[in-house]
Image 1: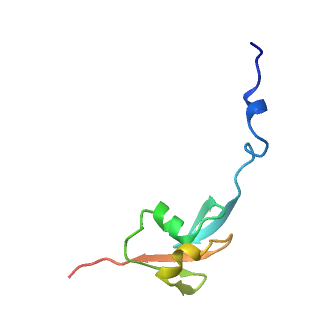
Image 2 (image 1 turned 30 degrees about the horizontal axis):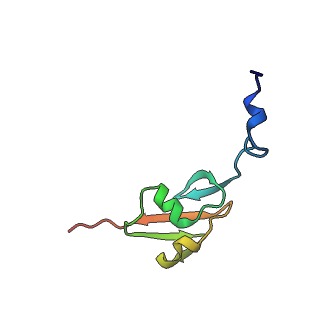
Length: 86
């Protein structure tokens, strides 16, 4: 059996790093995989289904558009979670 390097069996481009974007979430820089939308980000942050308000670059994003809003390098997000109480 002839030996081979694992690298020889992996498709070209697979070993290249995935592109990343840097955005600011509530004042904290975050690096994320490129091509992520707002709904996916909220899901990754375990905020799906919770009452949140999101501001992107100074503008409120309607909840109905979360899945359509692709996040871009340099975006500034403010995410506020509503808390019930009395």
